Image (cartoon, rainbow, N blue to C red; front, top):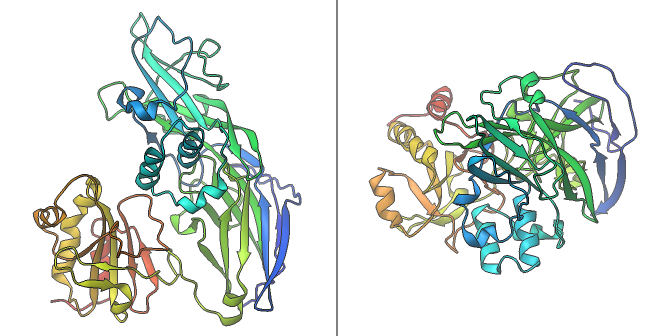
Length: 456
């Protein structure tokens, strides 16, 4: 095995989906510190090249509720739009929030939202309150306003407030389309919007490309949104070049890091890294952290303990040691701890009582639970309970017979997983290492069959 040189070399390249032309620029800041008399190297890399096109996740769409479905308290922070076209009928207004945490935090700090509303939003969106240090108290214009409606000749149009001045009079209406499924059509119908972001020190101006289309699965005039834009950079780790790609609308703050390549259509999720996660590069581990809200800067760090001792870090990703989970079984009030199940495979299922896809998975999970011996595998659900419900009755009614713990119970420990969407799942091997994530349908059963687990 090659040894990774601690002095990482970084460079940026011009990159798009079709061109192999390369231009190099220096784009990093190096910082060295010592931990336990060992030197650790951190690099802040500038991803200052932006591509208009389909990013590493492929063509993906996002839906939000129209303003008429938003509560009065939350609407207090929404911009009061001027010059709504009086020629349109059946009008619907939308506000797409690019950074929820910053939006709710700034409006709380400015007295528009109460602390109660902010904390409720933080809890609902799985925001980590200590991360407010990365946010600005001042107003950051990180929203996009859109209006849609019917013209007198019954054509459906939409208008994007492209210069973000809360006024539709200087924006052009566009015909609302659907089924935009190739890059050329998507870019042809994209609108560039003036936005802002906080870089950790000050508020900066930026551009965000957005595509508006009709939700083809909904009969009413609902909209879906695409963001065909990403940033990129190139990093040399040891002897190999790696491509860093970050989509500019990115609620999970993830990046993709893959071996250098001249172009891509989409990238496998195994190359995706969330904040504080690791990449194994040769014999060593490199950790990723975001720096700015628009991902034009990121940080990569090598931990000296991992380099020296060759130990596997603890993180919520494939190939790493699973963070511990503990709590009380909802059905029988017996304490559960992931550490107790070393020597077995463990399937962790993070689900919510309001998550239909989560509940749809229960029959497949039960099939596995009833098929394989508990000498070889345990299943633990970690449930996000919403509303006033009897959770024991809910679990029994759904025929859930495996262990479950209440995520919000004060005795529950899930530190290190940072779950912000459901369902999310992890398969952990007998040594405590995560070997698969987000298994759906028959994937869990097929994986356990391949591992030749004993059956009941």
